[in-house]
Image 1 (cartoon, rainbow, N blue to C red):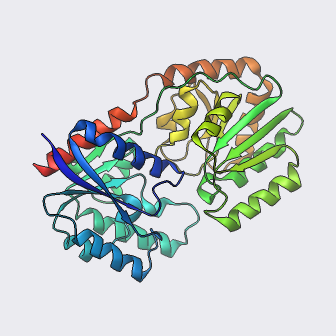
Image 2 (cartoon, helix red, strand yellow; image 1 turned 90 degrees about the vertical axis):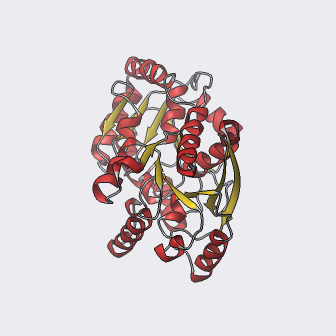
Image 3 (tube, rainbow, N blue to C red; image 1 turned 180 degrees about the vertical axis):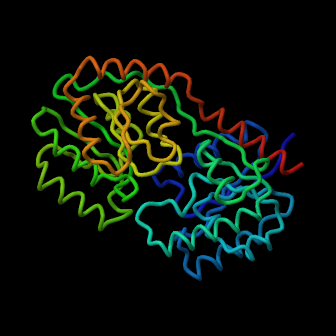
Length: 348
């Protein structure tokens, strides 16, 4: 059975974040599994769209043929008013990477507004695809979504060569945009307790998404950890592959992750991991592959990092468990198959 679908995605699809990466992989693979899919570019500005952006979105969605299934990325979907969604002639499937209201740094009022908007929007969807079991649980428990409508399509992780390491002082790698949810301020505070050890850190991720926060992080690094940390900004896939290959330890300090795709990338390459248990991260990485602490606890994170940096045998143990777990992760073809099946069921 073949179906026709329109994948509505806000902003620039080339943006280097996990959510956009997920969307790109789905778009590329869905035709293989019987979905004739086209990309519909929605305006930028979500999840806080301007009136003009909402008007454009309304016109674009209204123009989709009735026989298409609309797959709508959650960055926009949860912020589109229900009256607009109810006017769409096509059946709608929402793709929720993680609930909008759980983004770190929002005011209480903004978080509540997004929660209410997304809760109502989800009632307009014929099905909901989520990228983790945790997000499924949150949508059922807090947003009242019918369990029968929620389908988990974990992000894929393509197989890659095992990391060879730096061959020198322990080199740490963190990957992700410099935004409050990633908690790089906490990471830097944690690393201040490790200055007696020989290590360096590379942070690969955009500095432009939350510029004030990024400026604070850069100042913190320059003041307290001068010469230890390199900020690369966004990097190409080839450059990121080289970073993974020559790293000795992967670190993730996020307050919340809907899945944590870079954790999968670290595991498939056999990198030992130090991380928080924010959101779905503890579900993504099995026990034994990482040292795990509570999010926001710089002291605990510093202790875990000190252990991992100073103990080569511990890193080797974590690395072996990480590599073994990485070989069992789903691929992007597995992800696309699940999404395709949901779209076919909704179309039928």
